[in-house]
Image 1 (spheres, one colour):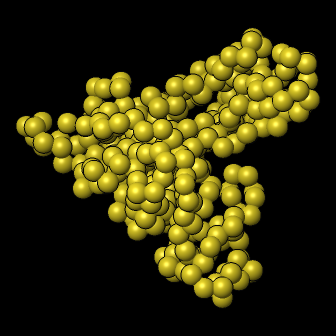
Image 2 (cartoon, one colour):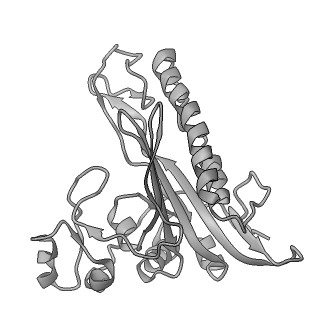
Length: 283
């Protein structure tokens, strides 16, 4: 039942986004129209996936995205944080360096038509909130979306909040970072070593919806790749011993469970991943 609801939502959303992509191309006013309400879309689709959960009736961001309550609606039993992002970022004109919306085809300053495309949107995770509420937040749901020229690819992953690497990554930010926010980039080292588990993948075309993968009960970690699965760039992992540097010499992917202990946490000194929002409560 959940799958039919998810697919219905994706079909309707995809139709709107194809219209918005064309609008962004044709308006040519340095205004983004496509993929602009990703947070709301992410929460809506996860509410279809997790039927026993509700939202928090909040627009401020100071509440759990999804929560499961007791039968009297007085106590939160479990919560999930949802991060839905468009990987089609703003692009830069190669001639004059002016920034343009991702689907706009002409630079308004020099009429250039050649751009450096960005693919670096990040899922912002509050390190302080994670530490404060980690006994309530069981999972982080990450939904990266990208238009690759002929289809919109929508993937959904879960990262368990008690994953050791993920906790080290978030705790380092809380204790050493300039800002509060961990910017988890899909396809990055931190993403893959945090143990992402795929829940679904859909390809949305102009005239059809294709299910590539769907298993909401999946608990198998994605294999650790040698390259960023989005950009194809080789990932520069750190290892606890130099002998493990040869792990990817024969394989593009290696087992997460069998190899995660061989990787060293890639800390970033003086890491500024966002500005502090101050003390917030989610009661």
